[in-house]
Each structure stands twice: as C-alpha cells, then as structure tokens.
Length: 384
Image 1 (cartoon, rainbow, N blue to C red):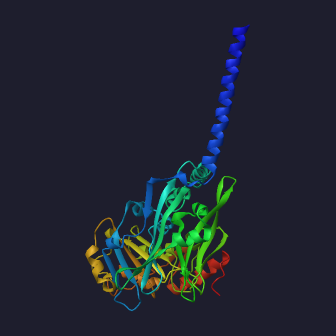
Image 2: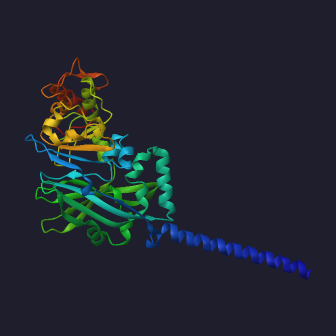
Image 3: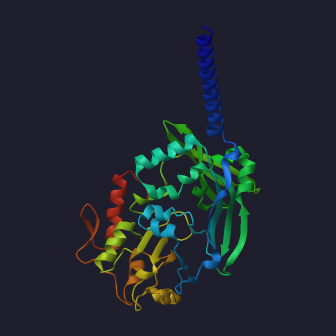
C-alpha cells in the first residue's frame, strides 16, 4: 500500500508541476504577446526605406513653360514587382512627392521587426488570406508589427539638386504620442497630404487603434502645424485608401482636362502605342497634376514629342531596369498623349475611344461631359 501510495503521490506531484508550468507558460506568453514591450524589437532585423537622392541619374525640367520635371533612376526589385498593379505602385514606400515648384519631399523610414506579437501577426495573416492581395503588404501589412527607429522627411531642392532640409518626424510624434504609442503607428503609411493656405505642409499616416473581430482597426491621422509652428494631430475613422477612392473617379477635383488612367491608356492604344510600360494618373494632392511614369525600355522612338520637352531623356531609350518619372503640371491629357507621337502629329480618337461599358468618346471635351455624368451617377458631385 505504501509503495502504491507513493506512486500516486509522485504522479499527482508531476501533474501539479505540469499544470503550474503550463499556467506560468500561458502567463509569460500573454505578457510577451499582448503587451507592447520594447524588447520585442530586434536590432538585427532592421529595414530601411527612402530615396537615395545621389542615385538619381537625371533630373530635368521641361523646356516648355508648364513647370514640369522628369526624374530618371534605377528600379529596385520592389518597384519592379509593384509595377504589375497600378494601385500598389502608387503606394510605393519610396514615393517622391512634389510639393511646390522648387521642392520634392520623400520619407526616410527605419524600422525594427517587432517579434512575438501573436495578435497582430494573426490579423495580418487573416487580412492577407481574405484579401488575397499580397502586393499591398509592402505598403502597410508587414510593417504593422514594427517599431520606428527613424522617421524623417527630406526636402529636396529641384534647382540646387540637393537635400535642403531634413525634419525629424519621430521626435515630433514622440512628443505627441509618447514612447509606447509609437508602436501603433504604421511606418510605411506616411504620405504627403497637401499644403495649407499659410504654407504649412500636412503629412498623413495610419494609427492602429485596436483589433475588432480579428481585423486591424485603423485611423487616418494628419500631422499639422499651427501659425505658431506647434504640431498637432487630427484623426478620423479609416475608410478607403486615397488611391482606391481616386481610382474610381473619372474626373479630378480640380476640373482640369485630364482623363482617368484607363481611358488615357485606351487613347494611347487607339494611336498604336504600347502601354505596358506606362503608368498614368491625375494627382489631386501634389503640386503637379499628373504622374506619368515610363519604364525606359518602353520609351518612344527618337522622333517623339517627349524629347522636345525633355531632351536629355533621349539617351535612356531602350535601357532596362530604369524608369522615368514625370511630374507634369499645366498639360491636358491630349497634350500628354502626344508626347508619345512624332513631333507635330496630333492625337486621334478615330471612331471613338472606350470610356467604360462601351461608352465611346470622340474628343477630350466629349470625355469631360460624359465622365462628369458617370461620376454624378456614382455619387461624386464635387465638380459643381
């Protein structure tokens, strides 16, 4: 009996130890996974994004009086991958924004991976699974679970061709949010949102405010500056990506004679131009009104109108793994389309260019009229 009793006691002790170990394990797991301790971030897994301005091979202002600029640089692998999707290309974390006649800005972000965060990881995986849009993860999903080590905005002088000023956003945000809440800021979501009437630059980013039904809940935040140069943040409920909303509009809010991206490409195709190496969108925020990006391997022939506007661009014809980014202001869609035609040749609408659902347009004025009608049917009444 004594031996049997000892065995039962040993078994009971083992079970007790196992239960205690499991309880301690779950407690430690809960602390590590669900509380945003800084030790979750590891310096050996740093990631950096931003523009290396020294690697820009060409920065050329237009010879015409429309105040446009062309930049040529090497394409990195991320940019090549994102070229497959217009939306994700626009969300490129190495984006350049033209904020005035004289300046570009770009964000320099350095992050450390934040490990052992079960709640955020599971949300990200669920989002990827349900949305089935792996390209977008480069913009915000993988970086949800990260810590900002560095966040700067660089102001580049177009005329002097150098960085004129650097602004430490991390310092500003730390003063506003505090150290712990910095972990809730999505690092690669920083973007330019425009300039106020008093010349203050507005910058946007996303802030993760919680998890609901296994989905990440975000807020649209805007970093502003008052007349006394004090910084503050305003926020609103996240709805749609700006580029998603933009993609559904046929007309830009400025009332300019600019087509949506799909109709513009249809116009180019009507004139025998291959569009696979061309990205076009009107721009409703930046100083420029159109973003026109061309892979240099897809640049038009030497007699094209494009090289009257940007003579130095001609030497890049046929070169691979590079792209020309044109920040265009003061041009209509017809004039931009004529960049790809021989000098002096006019763009043709032929028997009509498809707008959508077999609605044909025969001129840019015809497009403006029919596009406005379509937008109003979709509830876009921002033009009156």
